[in-house]
Image 1: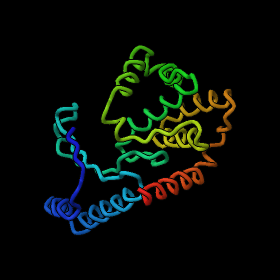
Image 2: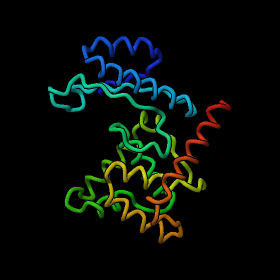
Image 3: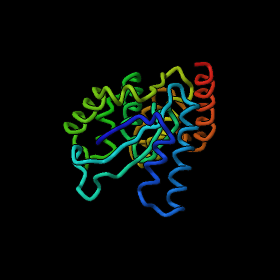
Length: 203
């Protein structure tokens, strides 16, 4: 998988126009890229990232050359856009470590048939050692009041709902009120991105 930091929006728009999409398709892509750039500007150190699928990471040949755009660094509450799984799981396993929770065991408990503990532990260790993911992820601290609400919300968006159920019970057992995170996530996200915008403006 090839990854690039977009520094010239006009040049990238020209590349999109060269793809031979319909007028509507081109317009939608260009507008989406412009919206991402605006959102990235409201995150400290934010930038637009371009991801191109290729042979290196085992993608099937028919998918080689598929392009995705996203925002980095990943900010808590951003959720899922098809590129954020590693970032969300890195935040989740880091917060779990701070709480004394074994993330690999929690994950395997949530998905006992699909994720044997040995395999899951290897994946978690590789994730924690991934320097690029660490550089491109803002990891909150437990002192931030919405940290656990946001990570549950983000995991839920990744469709890791069984894992959310397991973790929510573990968080509750440690005195954190999160069992209604789905009802509180909207306000938590708003606070998270208000904070990001303030920090970005001050940078």
